[in-house]
Image 1: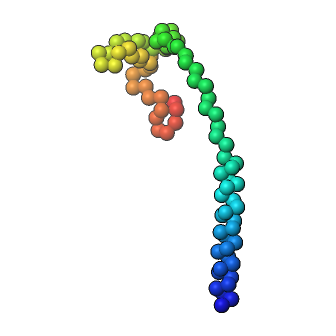
Image 2: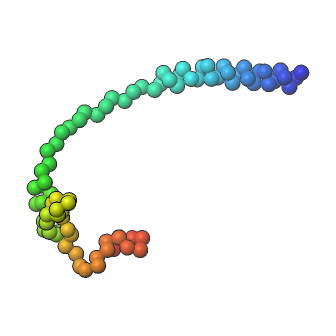
Image 3: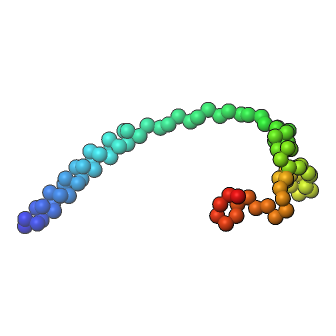
Length: 84
């Protein structure tokens, strides 16, 4: 009987806590305003100018304009788990 009373009291307390806390949590959640969208125009020429000193540009029939880094034969910038 005592165990049943404690169990019933525990359930009542937990239910009361849920009833009190859920609306409080929902009321605290305020939506965040979306950031304004900024449209920017960056041309391919921007990248051509900045990357040209470090490699070469060529036209690939499938991919279009492609930039290839100027590096030594068999150059692997990330090898054996670290940047070389």
